[in-house]
Amino acid sequence: MIINVKVKPNSGEQKIEESNGGLIVSLKSSPENNKANIELLKLLKKHFGKDIKIIKGKNSRNKVIEVKNAN
Image 1 (cartoon, rainbow, N blue to C red):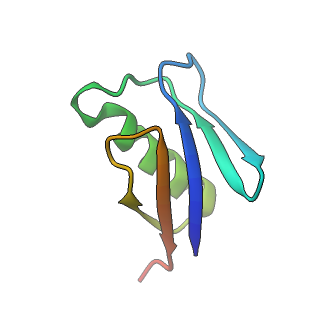
Image 2 (cartoon, one colour):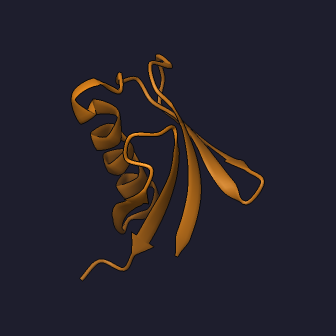
């Protein structure tokens, strides 16, 4: 499954919201040193219970995420 995700780093809270067929994810971490991407992957893995991979937008707030079945 492919999902468009808009990331809001430095939000002070973790929150996942649905919006226009995608997700808006608020993160506590800053984007420096890949911290926000790591937090995003952990949060989405917990939310979906499956493996998550960023396939586009690693350095952008707008990302394309692949949700894969855990093996």
